[in-house]
Length: 132
Length: 286
Image (cartoon, rainbow over all chains, first blue to last red; front, top):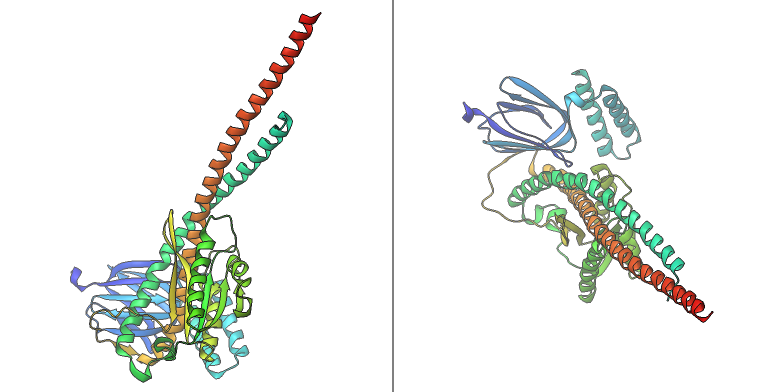
C-alpha cells in the first residue's frame, strides 16, 4: 500500500534530519497538533515548539522541534524547523534549562509581543517535558 | 657569493617554513571535510524555504505585500554586507570577495546611490575599512566555530531593525560560493527586497494561521538562513582555498630547498678544490 504513504522531509538550518515515507506525521501546528496523511489538502502552517511524531510501518519516531514551518501537499510534507533534535538525543536537563531560559526571557521581555512569544514557548516546552 | 654557513641557515629557515605550510595544509584539509558537509547539509533548508516563500509570494502581491518582499519601492539607499573569513593564508579567497564587493559598491556610488557597509569576518573589515571608513557601520567576527543559526541571528536582527526603521531600500550580500575544492567564486546576492524565481502557477494552499502572519514570520527567518548559508559556504571555500594555497607553498618551499642545496654543494666543492690547489701548488714550490 505504498500509495497511502506520504513523503516526509524534516530539515533544520544545519542539516536534513530525515527523509522518509511515512504513514502519518503529527506536527505541532500553531493552531493545534495535526496528523497529516497522504492526500492532505495543500497547506502551509507555522509550527510551535513541540514534538513531531512520524509513524512508519507501525513504528514511531519522535523529534523535538523549536518552532518552524510545514508545507503540506497531497504527496509530501516538508517541515522547516528552526531547530530539531531526535527525542532519543534530547536530554531532560537541557530541556529544563530551556524552560528556565524561556521563563527568564518572559520576565525580561520589553514588548507585549515578546512576552507573549516567550510565555508561549514556556508552555510548549512544559508540554514536551510532561511527555517524557 | 654567500658563504656555505649562510646558505645552510637559509635552507634551515625555508625548511621550517615548509613545515608550517605543510601543517596548515593538513589542518585545512581536515577542517574542509567538516565544513563542506556543513555547507552541503544546509542547502536543502535554504532551498525549500525559498520554495515556500516563492509560493507564498505568488499569492500575496500588490500594496498589502510585506516590505521585506516588495521593498520600499525606492532604490536609493543601499546596504552591502560583505562576508569573508577571519583569517588569511588562503590564496586569493578573501581578495576575490572583496574585489566583487568593491565593484558592486563602486557601481552603486557611480550611480549616485547612498551606500553603507556591514562586514562579517576580520579580513573584510581590514580591507574595506581603509577605503570606505565613512560608510562603514559594523563588523562581526566569526570566531573559530562553524557558523550556526544562533551566531547569525544578531547580524540578521541588526539588518532587520535597520530596515524596519527605514534606513535602507536595498540590502545586498556579498560572499563566496563553494562549487568544489578547486573552485570558489564570489556571489553578489540581493537579500531585500527578496528576489523570487517566479515558477509555474502557484498551487492553491491553505494557510494556517493566515498568509500575512506566515510571511511575517518566514521572511525574517529567511534572512538569517540566507546569511547562515553564505557563511557556511564561505567557511568551506576558505578551507578549500587555504588547502590549495598551502599545498602550493609547500611545493614552492621544496623547490627552493632543492635549488639552495645544489648551490650550497657547488660552493662547498669549489672551496675544497680551491684549498687543494693551494696545498698542491704550495707543496710543488718547496
